[in-house]
Length: 104
Image (cartoon, rainbow, N blue to C red; front, top):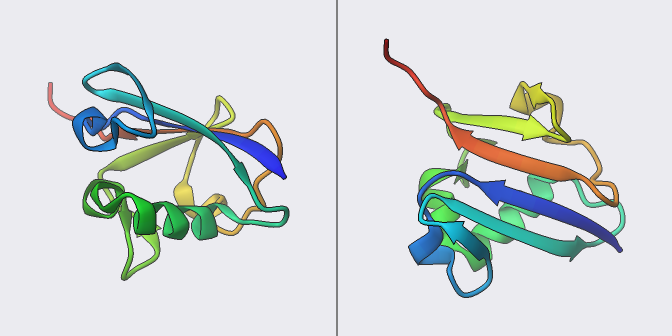
């Protein structure tokens, strides 16, 4: 098993409170063991089954992709999500998902 950390900066702490550490109202963190050989996309599908709010704000179950207004940081590197959808998760991976910021 691999331990992977997911950090969400999407104001979901009230909805994810029971299983996620919630250092603030907008930040939720969860480290969990994932099956050997599991991809990011497979993990997100599994998480949406357990946490419906993730499917509403983070991962579109129909398209099997992150919503367009979500930015991904994978192991301290901002990445284009399609680069990692089918990447196998490794022990120690850290994924941070943030809302796309805009304005001026």
